Length: 118
Length: 113
Image (tube, rainbow over all chains, first blue to last red; front, top):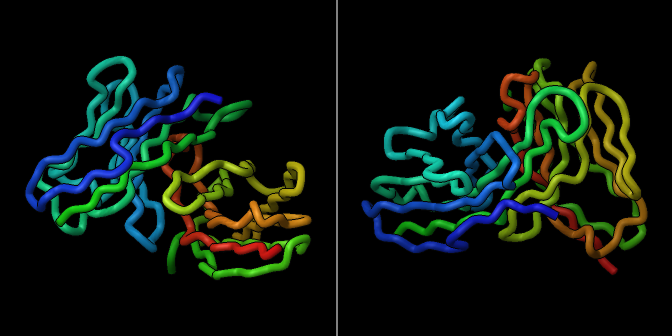
């Protein structure tokens, strides 16, 4: 079964430091996403990425966040200057295609990267 | 009013019980409805996916969508201890960005042997 792979599984950082979370989406998928889940809270959409550009972002995804697909396989989320409130599980997800029909709209999540900001 | 509401539980049932999990939503634009299962400190795993109204069955799981009431349900028959997890409802609008899911809070289910 194809899967979305995320690294690291857990990262501890000091406030103000830059963090890069990495994801390898399912190889033939075209749409890529980052979600966040603060402990005890809902899973929240951060950003979607298609055709090498951001297609949509939430209010949470401010100038401190950026995403990149530096090569044909990796998809990264960078937080430039981490804050305490950035502590959360970050999930990468990918989607083959949108619209109707078999296999459409099925979002597959990775296991997550837990970020702890001290 | 929150876009998606889900009772967080926890819900505790004996093994073999029928479990009913529910979500309500406010936005009539939602067309795709999903149920995800999430184990502790793991990513959400898709269980069921339904487009528009109706029922869908997969083994012990049945998903129901009632768009007129803005209400979705997941039923688990013959529940097993391995079903113990948090169940998240999720939904998305039309076809413009169907990977942008709006999640419920999640209901924590414990099935006792």
